[in-house]
Length: 98
Length: 240
Image 1: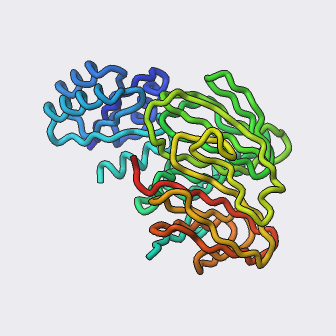
Image 2: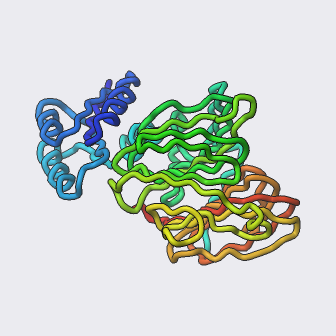
């Protein structure tokens, strides 16, 4: 069974890399977007197991986004993703998924 | 009462990609060990050996403080901020990835291996403007002395980063003893032995062993072999 992971970050290049990395593993399905509106729309349309918050999201936007995503999916895990699609990604996700 | 965690050299993660022989003190890439995720804000300590002319093509980073210390050889660095530089043994490079930066890193020499330590710290502030710096260090100043090579302060010795961390390098004569005082209350120290054998707080450490110590304000150090070389990373234990 695939784990669906939603990534939100403002940097287009990093978002492309994240999409490639997340979808390179058969056990993960990655959906990667740059805007909060897209993220909310996706969260409304499909089951999401984990949300990774990437770069460039200011504190107010992050607060609103977290609240809205949890309103839609109260059980979803939301974590900060550090590094921008780097060697940290696998460990971050494994820890988050327990 | 101080606490410690010992990471012996042969317990590190290992990945040999042919051109890159990498040892990971903490989980990185396909090496995943939930007991080895970080020491405070210290998230990555990679010990890389890279073949001549080989390296990492352009790739992005964000929101990490990335410190590179060449131990032997030279790195050719290029980044999206317009920096193009060679960093040699005896120098230190720092990059605050912040809102996002892309860079490439290659062995600048065709016929020599490049040995480097790459260290990543969680920043104390997210989404800062990316920045780059490098500095030549006075290698002689670390003889029987912990030479500060990094701090949070732009006007202090060494390079600076967005984190309340201090790094020091020392190279010691056999039998030399000293005490290192932790720079900030609440910080811990991760000691990494680059070469030789040392004893820190009663723990004997060999080449490439790591020892993390916290809940203390100082550590006791003794060099057991000639030219023992150690990197101390004095870092906050609490994640921001």
